[in-house]
Image 1 (cartoon, rainbow, N blue to C red):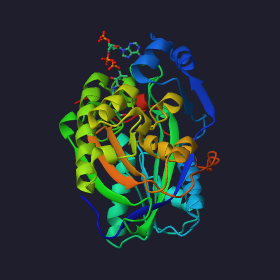
Image 2 (cartoon, protein in one colour):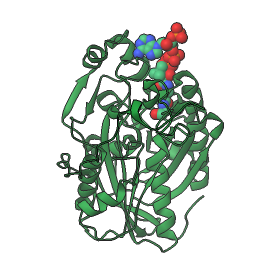
Image 3 (cartoon, rainbow, N blue to C red):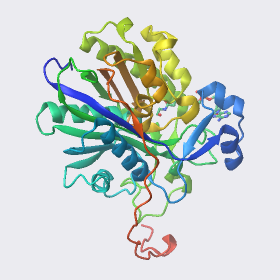
Length: 365
Ligand code: UT7
């Protein structure tokens, strides 16, 4: 869909990265993994990632990134908060209301969006629809994840791929001629592949009062090879569709920013779109796959900000669990990105004592 009249415009961007930096060899040693630094670099492009420390959670990163984006926009007036994440602080409730509270935004609507690695673009599209529909004037959109809390450190297929972080954007109602304007959106899903990226346990399919499945069922699982093939196909198709919807010939796109899952996937998609190396922007080597945070962390990268000019045509494309995919055509914003360190964890109410799993009232049928 293309927006010719009123649209949402990015007026501020912000980021937050945790302090701990881990090399491939750090991950290999910690998980006793049968892999090598060379395998990880050549198959994925990843050399390092940053991760939260014990006691930190997604909201600590998301609150800091959101606050930085509000500072960047120079406007504390936000009337809606949308958080894209797969690693909420708790399964219930959503994390966005807590972020709104910690940012002193009052009683604004606040909710989470679950579209895994496509989440930030789904959330940007949702904010655009709210703004175009008149239900929000200025919306804070955050992509934040802490996959270090859900990956199995001993699973060589996933342990080295992910990093933690958060990125955010403030969007306000404006004209498509303004730098930072969203010009077109393409969203899609294919639930036939819902089990290709999954955390098998912890949801209603495996309720807590039933005997736990394999302990590893609480960890993130991915069928990497199958996901790889579908990611290339859908990201390419979706990016083409959004460029067509915007009325932009692919060669006029000055910047290509794809979800940072694998450098080889990103290069395949950009090659198919005919976009040369100097128009491809990313951070996968340094940060790994930061899931919902990966695209906003590229948007807020100081080096990327200096390489691009306000108004440059930019295509964002993502693919993730669900399966889901999303692309957005926008012009490069004029706001200067800000960054902040993680917020200190909030005090939480201690959980009531629970019986050990083996003592819970479950009997075999
Ligand atoms: O963020 C959401 C979307 N996610 C993605 O888009 C990720 C998509 N997938 C990928 O990035 C890649 O598939 C991986 C990085 C996960 C794997 O790379 P690959 O080049 O596609 O490897 P593969 O899946 O084709 O596996 C080749 C072999 C397998 O062994 P067999 O079956 O051929 O004996 C894997 O078990 O490589 C093995 N393998 C590893 N070997 C050493 C998988 N991970 C590792 C590893 N070290 N870390």
